[in-house]
Length: 264
Image (tube, rainbow, N blue to C red; front, side, top):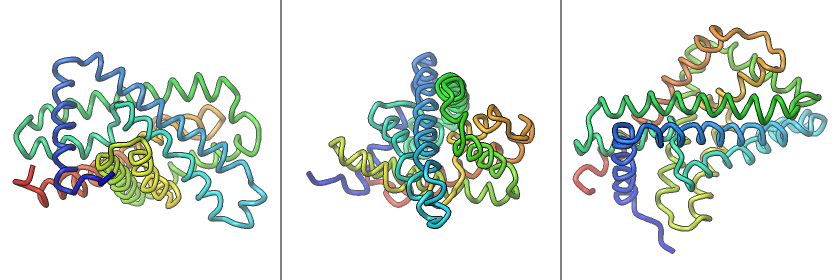
């Protein structure tokens, strides 16, 4: 089956974005439930990437790229579930609401309302999944996973602020390109592969995704990482979120709206 051309992909994003903006005003309950599910789905991808990516420490020490490839290959299940099942993900919505904004289907207020509500719902979903279905199940209680999640969380809050911001741009540029690719296809295989390749790339490259970090950093803290809530927010969540907005809204949403203005 032929995939959609770029202008039609942007038109599909505009239609999806308008629906998402409307939901924030007409049915907040459905929006929040969908956002909670998306946070849980991304966390599911996170724990799968930890179990698989960190499960071969001896092999990975001799082949450092192997751990990154394995983690990257496992993580995209979260975005695949979000896209195929229609959940509300903050980072994807950074780009999706821009084309409909450019056509004046909704205003900046509706966009910001959607982003704030979805961000909060994603956080709740990620924390609930991490606490109930990872920490309380003991999935990372033993090494090598225990040490790995602590090391990962502490590394995420130890980078310079600007480094996290720039890595946030890279992460959501990839995620929103994945959403655009998924919109181009009709079948499950087309949508899944569209999601998989860019997301695998951002994980393997070590970019920073704020919703994924709602899993990685709290899990590290639950397992004993020396991180406070304030430190997590200021050192990672703020810069990664701002970077994600730039990467998604500007580099994908605004760019493709401009390129295909008047064509959808």
